[in-house]
Amino acid sequence: MELRTLILVAAFAAAGTAPHGQVVVVRDGDNTALDRSSPEHVTYFSGKVTLEDGTPAPGAVHLLRVCHGLALDQGWTDVKGRFWFKVGRGDRGAGLGDATEAPGRAVNPDRPIGFADSNPITNELADCELEAALDGYRADRVSLAVASVGAKNLGVMVLHPVSRAGALTVSATTLLAPADARKAYDRGLEALRGKKWRVAAGDFGKAVQEYPKFAAAWFGLGQARLGAGDVPGAVEAWRQSAKADPRFVRPWENLTVIADQRQDWAESAKASDAWLALDADDFPAAWLYNAIAKAQLGRAGEAEHAAREGLKADKEQHVPRLSYVLGLILMAKREFAESAECFRTYLRLAPDARDAAAVRAQVAEFEKLTARAQ
Image (cartoon, rainbow, N blue to C red; front, side):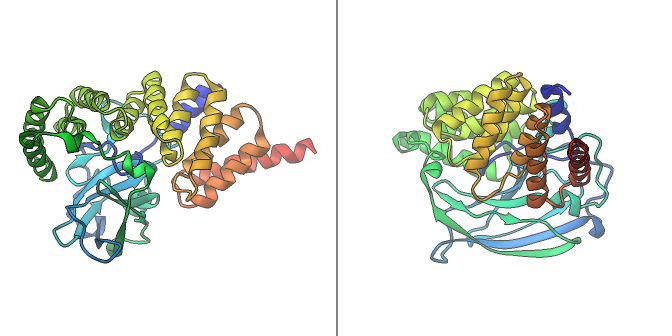
């Protein structure tokens, strides 16, 4: 099978994926088939976010449900760092949608074709983690995998001071913003937390009008526009954000994901290249998107290089799909032994993935081929 076709087949499925804590979230999709208020279809999560010394964070912490690299908004902590949220079958996040739903049919590196959920919520959360996102800090992700619906306390998530990669998530232009621009920006953030998209867009718009180089405000404007369903407007705002501060990584993350959703492989490759140029060591999801884009463009050698570099960067193995994508690339090259090993690694890291049975079947076929060759 042609490599581009192979990757594309591996990309389609039934649930969403986005990288890191600063990633794309979009408006709610149509999930009217299920009554989410029904207790048997809902799982409740709670917990707390603190600094390393146990004190509350200096501001509200954004919570994101990360599934295979794509993040869904789950709201914010309160002033004491506490949080709770519920997830129902097909739930796209706290008032926002799965980014794979807009615009059009999305390409998702984490789904095989033809899979349907057999277990209402446990399947949807099997490969998901919760991330706490606050500028200047990072926290270890917590698994959201559950054996059954009900209530689950996730305990305490500890925020750590930023690394080199974390520093890139904060724009230096924020410190240079005039007082009026900063006030408008703060109002925009408050409206964004309340999911008042148009109000937030207005405030962020005032901030960038007052200070056109305000990269963080441009980024916030993109988030607000996306929440309101204006994808082209969001893309333009993120491009302005990247232009205002070339060292600010967050717009490149979102531009990469949006391009992937649109199947604009040239743009996805360009955006992920820019993302990786800022930091190639701390964002394995960037390598994943880069590998898929390069494969779709027929640049098989570059795709393989990206997948292998992503595996090196993924020291904590948070992106098991890298092994799967590399396995597909090698399978197209008929390098079945290493391809099978990649699939085995994927199954070890994500044994409950929805496509696990199909991947196991593929490994079994490889083993038969190997036995015949001997």
